[in-house]
Structures are given as structure tokens and as C-alpha cells.
Length: 230
Image (tube, rainbow, N blue to C red; front, side):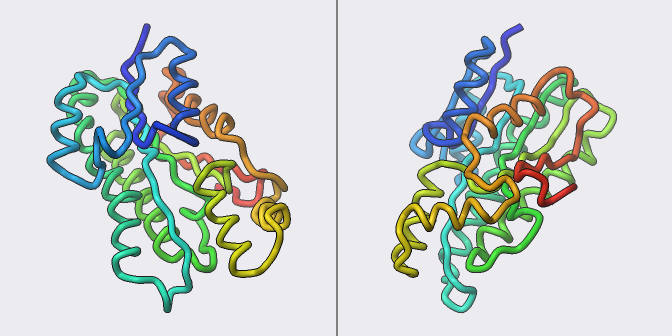
């Protein structure tokens, strides 16, 4: 049976791959970008989800990152990352939760990061906001225990996306390394030894969103080749 799937930040990168994965399974997929649904705006989120109808699967994928030592991290950058990465997941989840609970059916999957488990240098705002997103997911899962609704998260290492390309450019500009060397440095950060492909993250999301995954709740699925075991 076709489900209604909403993938926030679904116009490119990981979000687009997730949307394509669900479409290929016959689901109806909405993949709003910021222009359609600003996940940091409470009223915009409420309007959007009121207009789309009952959501069967919510994928909290919208996210941003910036990089700087803590001493040079501005309050605006800190707040912006929390607003999108953590508050956005909260607002969108809250918007669909009552409907899912009333139908006793639904899947909520948050796209987090290995940075939701460990700290990385120069990513204070991103790391803290992804920890917050996973913490929120676990609280939701605890409230959902024993129902037909689940909340989980996928936590990939670096993925071959525009966001990662920006990280590569930062390394190049600051270190003088070549682009290939900078990419190799990111790939070496996990035992996988390479960048993940967006389709690999999409597979993990589709697994957690499957009807057969009803017993999986409050979990983080780490995609890094075995470095973080949780």
C-alpha cells in the first residue's frame, strides 16, 4: 500500500536520494526545500503539514553545518545550526505525531551524523545540534513505546554531497592540500575508508521506515564501517 512520505530538505543530496528510494517503492513522496517549508518557522511548519494530509513516514533530513574553532564560532552560527538541525526536527515531528498516534501507525526517521555520538574538532555547533537531535529522537521514542509508531535515526560518516564538498573546500583553503588529498582525509576519518554514497543512507532510512521494522524504536543506525558501535 502506498504511503505518504515527507522528506525535509529533500531537493538534493541525501534528501533527494531518500525521496527517490521511497518513490521507487511506490510511495507518494513530498520533498520540500526551504522555500516550501522552512523547518525553523513554527507557523510555516504547521501550515505545511496541515496542507499535506496524514503523513505515514517523516524523514527529518534538513540540515546545515559550519566549521570553526570554538573561539571563532559566532553565536549566529551556533543558533542557526540548532534551529535547523534540532529545532527543525522537533517542529516537524510534533506536527505529525498526534496524527500518527491516532492511527497507531507511523515512522519517524531523523538523519543525524556520527557527530551525534562523538565530538569532532571545529564542529561545535554541528556536533552539539546533532547530539540534540538524537536526544530528542530518543525522548520521542520513549513516549511512543508500545504503539505502532517508531522514532529512530541514521548517523552517517561523511557522505558524497554538496555539504561535504564544502568541507573539502575549507580544508583546501586552510591547509593548502589538493582536493583529492582533502577528500581522502575526510574518508580516512572512519574505518569505511571512503565517502558514503547518498543511496547508502537512503537504504538505511528505508529500512527503519519499513513496516517490518516495528520492533526498532529509539535506535541510532551508525554508517561508518564499524568505528562507532552503538
